[in-house]
Image (cartoon, rainbow, N blue to C red; front, side, top):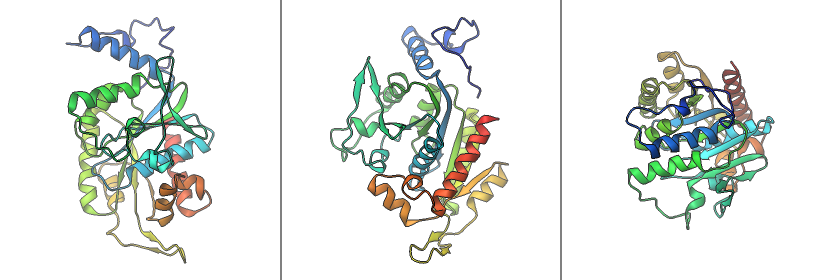
Length: 293
């Protein structure tokens, strides 16, 4: 999907998609879509981080990609839209973070230069369950793109809900110009089977797949550094070969990743010289190269 590079405030193009009413679109929907396009028009790349199922470390991958991009000097936003499992506030030590409002816009909380927004910031208690029906979820997803002061960004990294359900459909219908998706799997076939569904989803939704990340790819001993393959290996490579996709990298099952997340500091920041951080760095550089093509 290609993004029109212009400022909506000054756009006079009659071909601008924000100015065209879609079929069966009422006035309220049309105005909301215009506001979303206007709010996002200064974001160059919008990257979706997806997984076919929960428990594969999708949020950890999203966090470290976003942090690595920011450490590379890019202007980056990170949006946690995993409505039923918003873990990003914990991963940045922001469980008690509160959102301010300026000029009728929600202001993201920052970690260094990285702008962060999560549904978790809106919960009275971080242990509260989100029990919402579809229309309320759709409205919340729209609000993240319409009413957050993202400003000018090189990248907006979006941590999506796992699977291919209603929330993901709402997201892709709200953001019409996604740059592409990064799909996260683990080495086992049980995870790979669900990622294959995500590949098919992206193809049907016309979302470019930037590549595959195989997470938990071997266990790194914290004492000697030796890598032990504790899961069946090769799912990431198999998916990449089957669908002619790029295998961006294989992230080891490193205890330091969990420790960093629990301490509120991404591993690429806390242990920037470690092997895991360097693998995340390699993944991130490849994403940058693809986005710049």
